[in-house]
Each structure stands twice: as C-alpha cells, then as structure tokens.
Length: 151
Image (cartoon, rainbow, N blue to C red; front, side, top):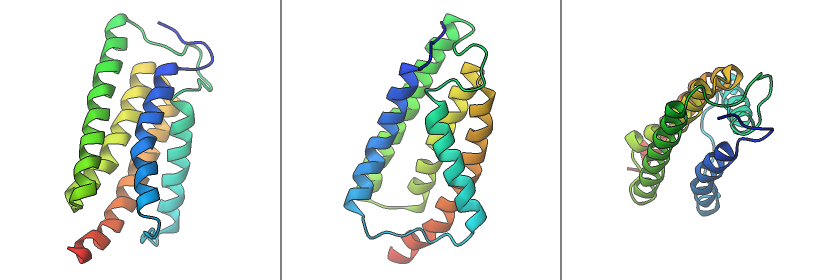
C-alpha cells in the first residue's frame, strides 16, 4: 500500500497523541520545564516537530508506504497498542504522578515515531525519532525531579 501526499493513518496517530497533551497543558498551565540543558531542550523540540510533520508528510521519500500487507497490519496493530498504552498511562498519570509513569509517557511516543519510520521506510522520520527520543527522555527525566519533590 502506498500513500499519496499525506499518510492519513499518520495524521490520526499524531492527533491521538496530541489530545492528552493538550488536555494536560490546559489543566497544568503553571508547570514549567525544569531542564536547564538548552541543547537537550532544542534537540527535543526539533525532534518533536519534525516527527509530527514526517508522520503524515512524505518528505525525501521515494515511495511512502508499506512493502507488504503484513507490514501495514503490523503498523496499525502496534501503533494502536502503543497509543492505547499511552492513553491509559496518561489517565493513570493524571490521578497519580510518578516518575515511572512520566518516563513511560516519554518512551511510548518515541516508540510510535520510530516504529512508523521503520515500517514506512521513512529514514528521515527514523532519524528524527531517535533525536526526539534522546531529547524527550532526557528532558522528561530531568523534570521528574519536580514529581519526586512533590510526593
């Protein structure tokens, strides 16, 4: 299966990942980023926005799609499971903030971006997914000190 200019599945995945983040941001307007490492903050943001765009837009890709039906099913099932785990983790995190949950919430979207890039053979997405994972997990871990202090 090949996509045209837009991967509709990628759009849906990105929207489903953003919804809990938007809700959390609205409810927690006063939380600040405690990570003082400017380089890692920049790496995280570059990786984040690049992944969000590359999930649905095939930049620098000859063919945007799957090599087989099995890969498409794997993409849908695995991303569906990762998204479900992400939403469940977010729901639990909203009730009980722990360092473990915050790290799970950093790792799951990284896995979604990485898996999508690999299965779509979108190597630019894979590269930015790795960049995002390194930055996001680092920044999240540094911000977890805030959670430890509150509990």
